[in-house]
Length: 272
Image (cartoon, helix red, strand yellow):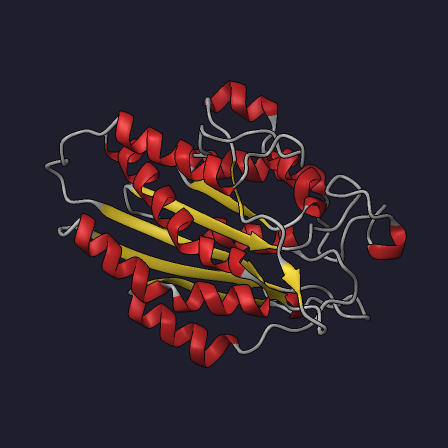
């Protein structure tokens, strides 16, 4: 399910990093319950935009795997952790889908090897908007089975279509049309319903305001009313870019504590 600690996705109301961490920690502390008798099982998936500007965030997510595993083992010694990965890019100039990088659930060690050896570098993207819907659909196809189910979304650009952003046709070839796979933002209503039915907690790292409109689509009020839940936006704050347009800065150091606070919150909710 989508998480109930979300706020509005507009840049003026999204809480800053410290506020979001305080909320997650307060929820975890205030509602702390005795350790469940049943073994804790956790499925975690990274959904990552693999176009060129995302290389630093992809590297950081990959490098944090060992730290995440060690922290989970320390806090939940009898837990079972499975991890998966979905990476998406975009369509090429001939409207052909570049394809997806997908690794179904495996051990954290296997995932790290996969990300090192098979995913390769971040590249591609003919326009700022990316094939987000295609990547999201791949997440739903994975073999989710654990009690705690978490998807971390990391992207710095929205999906295609006027329903996801206001950048205009000059920045999105499929601004007024369906993408070459036949998808459009309106499809997200059914996809989010499927995500909720699968009891998957969804967290997105907000890197800039260009994804705010897309986050509002994910945070659809109909789903809030029906499922009593919402999207959690983890704000890294303003990230600097170097001369090559790559993300840099201390905000990258906030990824791990936000990931762990989110995992703690989801473990509690799914095992209470």
